[in-house]
Image (tube, rainbow, N blue to C red; front, side, top):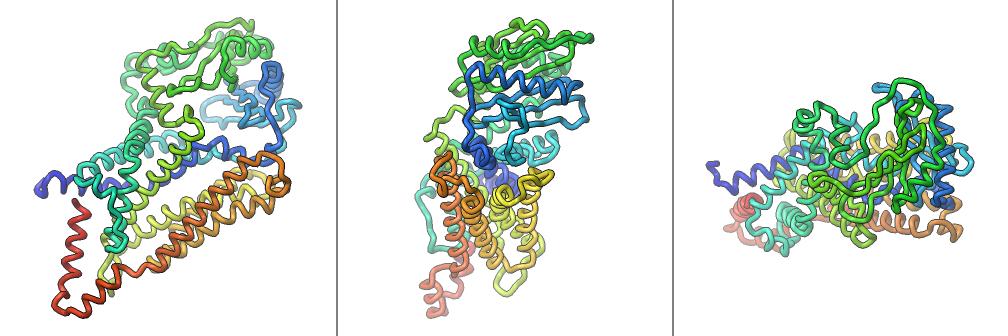
Length: 537
């Protein structure tokens, strides 16, 4: 603390942001895209744009019976069946089952009317970006721990940044583009950080809270002796668990259960969970979409699987701590948001991404070597990671969308190949800058990113005969807003490439004055010292 409290906070802010910045940028970008997770999934399954979901009780009951029949034939020994019923954003029957720990789960997508495999391309859709946001495409335990630790450091970086910038609101109204590169990036970092500061604090804190029981399980472990399901049931988040009887039983028809459940709860029915389906103590749980509001709590109706009798109706009645927790989850995921508020969340997410990106760039710009000297290895590595993350990550997402349109529909493991396209593009964006000068690497990376982003709507129109721009029919709103957003982003990336390519450093007048006045030759060194001081204060 010999440099003072604020200087110590500046040091903490700088290094905390750098160490986890690349992970945080990936989390921010994919999390921002996840606000439109359902729309992305529908765009990546264009075969469904002319399919509408029948969601009346009779149609849902029939679809549920089809799902049970399929599971009975293909997953008779599974311990739990999940039957995702057709909804407006996903008009298919989405089946998922688990057998035992260590065995890969099963998955199938069916037509909810005929029971035949749904005629659509195999893709992970928006779910890939959503799960990457908090698992990084890693084993769930590892991924969630890494993201959680980074989020905690992010919270430290935000608080220390507030302490560091004593002129935080004054700096928000200041953008000095004619000054040094370091000053310009610092101003951009301040503006994007301050403008959405309440959002940054909220989204970081609630993101940690959503996984708090995984990070701090000791209270529940001690009180419930590791029985988490009983904890969730007693707090009102799920229906009470019924242990298996250990003897065979016959599952009753689920159609009447669906009809009864929809009569008891007014919210749209989302899925059925069939627990221990071949046991005499089988349970069928109808799970509904959460009511409109902040709390992310799903109403549920539990049935005795063998008799069809209602066992429990869970609709509201959360305990205070559970109500607080589900409200935090609801704030983070923004399911309650209407069109305008969702756009605001999306824009704030973009500003959060820009805040992290400008912070990363500011670190390397502040440490550029003097003219005529070579950057040290650590700086080259940081610069490559900056370029690979700032430009490579969105480039990987664009490649993910392009693979969805260009890969053969019948390709085996097609969904995995889309993910491979994402990671290969991202890896190339990190490796190639190591062999290029920094300025040229930035220009080339941003130019390629602009071309990849522009290629998505172009390839979309060219490869989709049923595209609304070609036929005038179909889900025009979804395709047009998606293509429009990508065109705007492509223009933004192209502008960034142009600006970086044409940037000549501090104003020409200042350089001219330096040449004409030899006595002022010490000014650049003094200016650099002032800039370093500004960055710290």
